[in-house]
Image 1 (cartoon, one colour):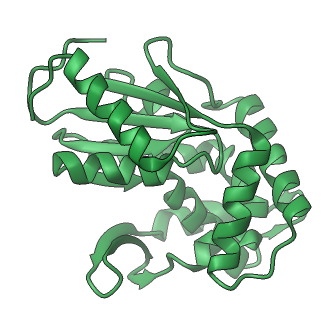
Image 2: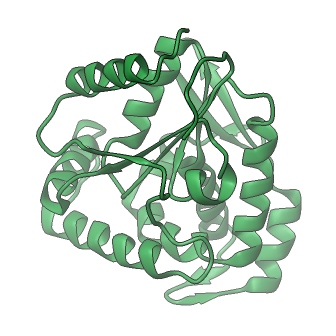
Length: 235
């Protein structure tokens, strides 16, 4: 990893499902006044589109129909002032809440392992990050999307901790959820993400590990600020 002494850094935040990547990456982007891209939201948006168009059923996916959907799919991120956050738009419509449902979670890893889906998403992600000054989180940002990223962070947390976070998030949104079902979904996604043939989830050799099982977001940011100081980075 290079010593960070320039502006416009590319920061990759990878890790397992529901380990707080998005929250942490957003905090970093806010601190540095960088663009933030949630790559996982992009895969969720495509999954939602597949569900809407009835091209996925159980373990079966209509690949021909998926190819047509991908060619016409437009995914964008916009800041919504009324909700004070960046949200995901699919073909011009805000789908931020819909892509976070358990229905989408059940299929997103299955959709994400399809080669043509990953190819399109990676191309879009690289376009977003071509000028630097970006924080992007996901599963393969530091290994595939931006292998030359200036800073790579790999986040981990115990499965039961991640399940509890996800469960509370769903409850907070008024979604009827079962804790054991949420935990089972997370463990299933972990397996699929780590074992898929294309762009499997793995730590980049030069990534720095952050285990946030028992630390708050504020403590994570203190860790990040100390990391910047150690790397001689001045914003």
